[in-house]
Image (cartoon, rainbow, N blue to C red):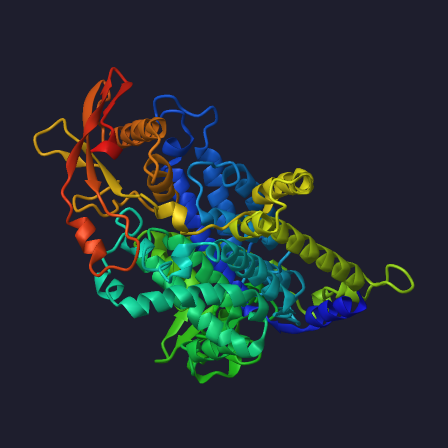
Length: 629
């Protein structure tokens, strides 16, 4: 136990630059925001009993908007701790309760969103760190909080968001003939119902595709054991990002690929971020900004602009120290220099007041839109009026030693060394909490693996499957597994295994036929490829629940009812009388690699599968037996 404690203590005390966490926070937040926006757009399809006809008991629009606002707070790092807690609650409400629209990215969101509550993702590059600067600075001293954080913040996110997922997935892939035969990458990318691009040029390279299948299997198997090793980090980073770029290219789950890439950015060596920041900085300032050193408001303005000036485009100088002696400002009296904000461009053009601010904003990425907005006629003049009002009243707040004295600012203290008892510090309590949390997460993940296909096959081999002993274990294992899925997204990751593709030999399209030409619903395109709606959870719903390897007539009818009702409302189609043709394309189920397999499936002809219709907002299905066609 002491060895484990000391290991975690070393990692806890190993401080590295937190820029990687800040970049992860922004990119991961944008990916999550995009998924919530999709939930918002399709909320009536997902949550209504019948889209727009029999609405859900709760209006989910307002909570989803509130969730989006919460994610924006996380992206900007504002009230981050509170925002991550609210974000996790929303995740429980929406993602954990979704059944037929769930897809694997939702499980990653659950685990990562839970961990964000405890991870210090706002240490740098955030509005929270700006608030700390403002809170603990005065006209004499500017507080610069440390931008370093424990390396554990990086390791734990990678462990939960990537390593656990891969390790669990391997226990399904190793029991899958599809993956053991090297077809785990080729086959999903060759099925029209699964992929959204014809990449036959790559798919036709047999040994490359088989090699990619085996590489994926090997990569996922070893990742959890080596990701924290320095010498392995860059190769794992390159392979991992490459594989997930392939997922974005081949499959309609771009946010799954982007979400993993965001997590992989946590493995980028911190020196790379430091070098990148240095390369992005201007060698020489683009603007010199003069401010009144004795004005609290001016100092706060300087701190805010300096915090957001990621490229070091602006050089800040105090008027009293530099401005009075600057030759470029000699035409102004001392009172004039103190009355206004001044800036000087590289071409020695002097800007004053609103013009100085407007120019400064245009050099700061986050404020660039505001700089453009202030340039608009009318807005510019209004800004001048507001600025003059503030400038005329700020002088009552000017602070010198004569009228304010000098009170040293108080800086936040490091509480880790605070003694809880004679031999225990607050850091020790934190470390025991971290160790206990990691151990619990590992236990929950192992419990999930215990229920995997490979584990169940092994239990059959040794003769304990369905035994009294096994059933007694399941009385504990099953409810724990169900709880871990809901709370943390820890579940079986049987991604693209044999059961997904066996006898999955049909594509279904829906065509609105109340006119001569017919309108193809954005579910399936005319060539049999995936329509624009089939992204993320909508793809999972249509491709694996409405339409699947083993068609369930009731599920198919319900899916056609919901999708046609949703489309009709969005396109102002009256459901008092409307008809939708169902077209079927029969595909093959390959047993091994085949050249041009995807092209051949897309070239298959459409045949009639019947039709569905709406009469007086009542749904009627006239679907043929698809499997017998």
